[in-house]
Image 1 (cartoon, one colour):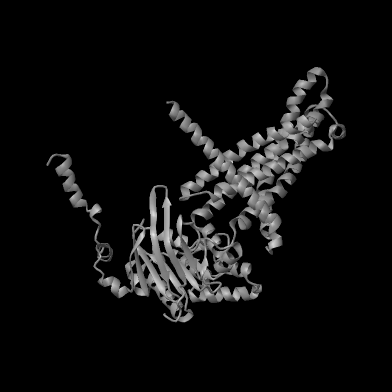
Image 2: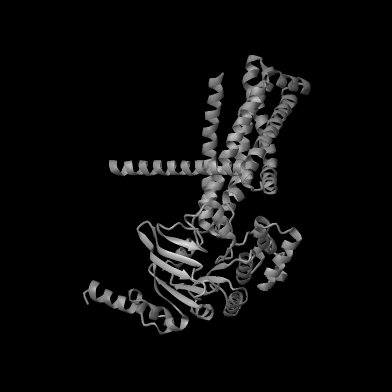
Length: 268
Length: 265
């Protein structure tokens, strides 16, 4: 890693609030080239907002995001467009265009941003869909696919332009364990064979530990720990322990709450 | 009490201003994409525009025909009821033609297209928004305004005037059916009386109106769709809002354009 000093993604002091709610409270993050970084966190921890900032869908209140050495919130239109071709994103629900077939979805970025002729586009789409095991579903509409197939199709579309960086939002949420493991395996292959930098946001522990080179645990708008899976496992920080051991936080301990309610409000 | 009232008025005013600003920005950005895009090497989306035009026209044509035939007939009957007393029955074609072409055909067509196509735009873009398809477009490097708004807006600007002219003709024919069937007027007489009174400016007034209505329907439909937040329930709300706002704005714009032509003489 020391031979590539410039990180693929460099996030500095990112802040974002919605009204009074501070979602991101000074996030710093470096994603190295060629690594798989998994961002873990509970619901409302700010991990989805961070991902939206990383791909430029959400403008932060303060701080900077540099992807491939381009500051995405200061870049002009042309360099941002160039950068967008170097990154792909697979959305949680797939976000496939419902009026197009699966193959047309994959061909869309090729048709728009490359000079590849139509017949070749079709072949590329077939290859990409073959990678995710969907070559038989090429001419089906997204509405005819299952949730797992939609996710895989979304991955194929994200890979259409051979991106250097792949973002994946909740790859295994709502999938059965076997399908989820299949997607994990696919991500591992991508990293191994194509040297893609991968950023995954998830709350699925097993999948996170299976694919991550480094894990980053987010809690209340900040990273508590960013380290290798082994170090994270040994980490003694209470929030990390709660997350890894599936313990409820104190504020949600129902029995204690109820006891306190009986004692305080009903006078013992 | 006073403070509460002021707060409500202030809140409503600021919402109206924000929305007006957003509509204006959408309009400017759609126009600049349409007109300047080709100079930045963007290929105009002709196929999408034609597709949308066909959708807008096809969906609305049967209803426009039906409603405008009926309205033409009603206009003929109502005016005959009044004019017969004065023995001025030959003014019926005049009245039907002028009221259809200057007023009713553009207005009714716009309202039908709002219900048929404006609502469909809001629902479609709203669904795309809540299922993150719009986000996916942005991440892939597409401009949603260029990709989605421009074809719809441009298609409406092309199709609505055509539908309006069609509605003009159908409305006049409806009037003729009544005049021939119930008033005993000859078809030839009806048509020649119609053309005697019509001037080009009448048609022009109607077309200016329909252009304004096309922009209203397209901008509000797209804006409501793209502003949808949350889930499926919100899509329904944006769709309803788009129809209500379009109709109110269409009628307001109708008065404005009519007043403008009236003042001009």
